[in-house]
Amino acid sequence: MKSIEDTLNLVGKIINEVSKETPLYIALAGGYSVIAHGVGRTTVDADFYIYSELVKEGGTEILVNIFKKYLPENFEVRAVEGTRLRGDPFGHDVVFLEDKSGQYPKMDFIIAKYKWELEGIKEAKPLEDIPFPVIPKPYLIAMKLKAGGLKDDYDIVELYQLLSEEERIKTHKLARLIKRDKKLKRLIKVKD
Image (cartoon, rainbow, N blue to C red; front, side):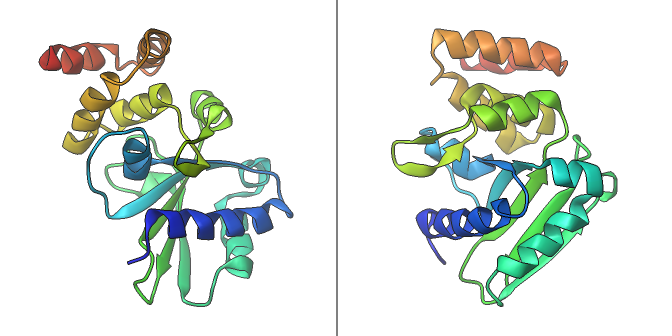
């Protein structure tokens, strides 16, 4: 299995090509971003949040067709409408990339649809060891609050311990915005 670095390099190359056709914003999210922020955990896929005006206007299939042009032959690409994904509390459209040779992890490109998600993607910056934009911790916590799984709850508790005071304020503001402030308070109280 290819490393996180190899995976991010591949995605970076693809995104550079795709960006020639349509401007887009992208940030590492999910388990890889939790790891990048310093929480020890495992993950079997690479999640990315992505936003493009072209996709907003013309649909996710446009992104699928552009990806197909630039992906190595061993990759399959498919899209699923958010309303058809069971258990997705966001209702996002997702583009899935899967390496048929099994060298790379499955990659999920989650199409951002909320203003706060786009704000988080735009604020994403490369981290010390990760030369790829990583979703900031407050936005990552908000996404995980919305997702609501057991691993997400664990990640929230661990990430919250790493926040600066400014990041904690932002996190609580986002939790109120997405109506998950009570859940956040309950989770961080468990840690105390």
